[in-house]
Length: 193
Image (cartoon, rainbow, N blue to C red; front, side, top):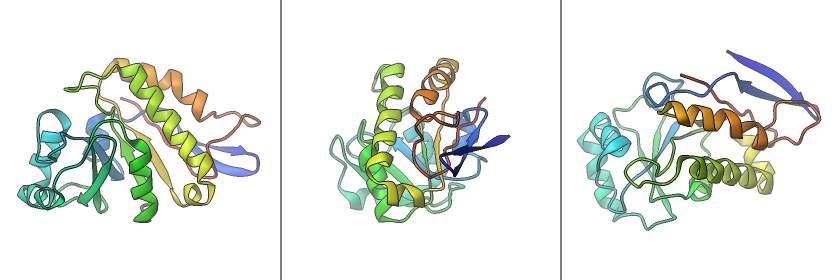
């Protein structure tokens, strides 16, 4: 499923595909999950509602204690009934850098981003992918020690057009070929529908 690459003497695992949303938020190898939510964090439509339903009422109870999440910030919760190692991270619109700060602070080993804000919020899919990939790459480049501690960053997709967008853009930010610049010493993973 994945290929081991050598970049500047460091091992980087890059999978051949990008996981579907169902794989990522269902039976996929259970990284900590990221989801765009409304500022109240009290559940909504789309992926947010699905996560709340799957996690159970306990998630709603915890989200009420967080008192919302302003745009550009992120907050973490327990996963409850979701098949995750330990955390859900909710963010209010595009704030991948805030999520990575939570990953760093809580010493999480993996994180899965969905296509943030492209559903009910109507953000352009290609722009969202560009922002997500660039933000993650820039954060890893500016935090090399912390980036080494992250074992897996996954970008989950739902629509065929998102698969195409990520397959096109990923090599720009996380190149596979030896000699090209690399994301960091971490494993970068992507997988497909």
